[in-house]
Image (cartoon, rainbow, N blue to C red; front, side, top):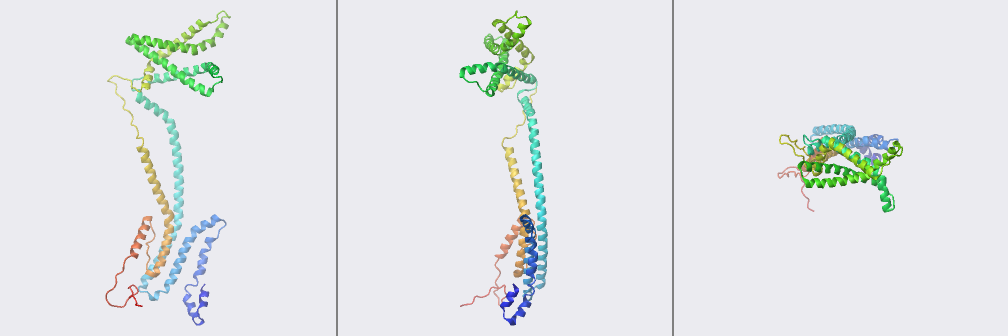
Amino acid sequence: MFDAIVELVPAEWRATVTVLLSPLRWIPELQATLLRPSMIGDSVAGIVLVSATLLLPALLVIVGLWCTMLSLYTLPFRSGRGSYITALLLAWWDAGRCIWLFWMGFVRVGVALVGWVIGVLRFTWLFFKNLIVGMVRSPFSLLDWSTRRYFQPGVPWVAFLVLLLWTGVEATIFTFTLNPTLVEVFAGLTGFEPNPRVMVPLLWVFLFMLVAGSFACMQVLASAVRQKKVGDIVQMVIVESAVMFFEVIFLYREMIDAITPWIAQQTGGEVRLGLAATLALASFGWMGVRGMSWFLFGRFGTPALLAVIARQTITHDATTPAVPPPIQPAMWKAPVEALKAETAWFHAEAKRMLELLSLPVLQLLAGAVNFAVMIVQSHGVFSLPFKTLDDMLAATHLVRAHTHVERPVRRAGGVPTPRDPMPGVAS
């Protein structure tokens, strides 16, 4: 490049031009040497990695070399040469620090990414751990809340749970007993066999409510007898008789039919149960089962069941201290506050990652600008290195303000300097 420039000047000036260009002739060769490693690699990923690591520092060194060598031509014409050389050396010091911080920026980004990965793994572990613990604790928490809400001290909530369990057991047993009969009835009415996956759950729910209603009728009947209310007694006797008739015909009769062959076998066929005997045994079985369950836990758990259905708290003596209701968490405040905290955290982490990725590159660019401005103004414009993005933005604002400041115009006489405005020449 420089040989071509020398060839353009006359022959008598070539030696002078060669001497003048001698401070710059060695830069292109060094420039190629600095840029060559960033273009060599076995794969595209390797080339990209080496270029990202070496290209920008090499460009900063090249810009610094060109600006430093070009500034040599201005030294004979500068005032304050010592200060200028000192500022130039400090600019090289800032360039070295910026290059070192640029390489250390890769380490900081790597450490931040490792921290993020560890944080994500820890968050995932805690999430699943709390989820499993919450799933295990939720039934106990629900039971504790239910007992505090519905079952104050002195209420036999154990009898209530046993009553529910017994009702479920009866409903399950009679579901399998009544299911074939019900399937035949529906098949005869509709012409096709119903789906057992739909029939069995519906039948179980119906029988559960029927058995629970039987205990409720007995509770109302016992209360009416205790209070000697004849009207309620007659009403409940009719209702309980209807319930007993239904359960005996459709439920307990099936159990008696199941033991009829055994009775015939044990008596040599002499005893054969007819309609009246079957219904009597079924009624006796219903009264035995219902009486046993009523006197064992039904009379204690049925009032609690009725209170739960009606959402009423069972009354107690005035001397019994009431359990204060548990503190209910806010429905929306806590999730909203958590969302705000997470949003603020993501904003802070995004800003920190942006600083880690952008500050090293911006510092290299600022170092190159300092070298270029050094030739014109004898000092740099940026104070390096930048600590945060706010420092970089503030430095840019100060540079703009300094550039737009109007310089004072000398009104007195004297020799104009390059900083003074030159008078206009009339054409």
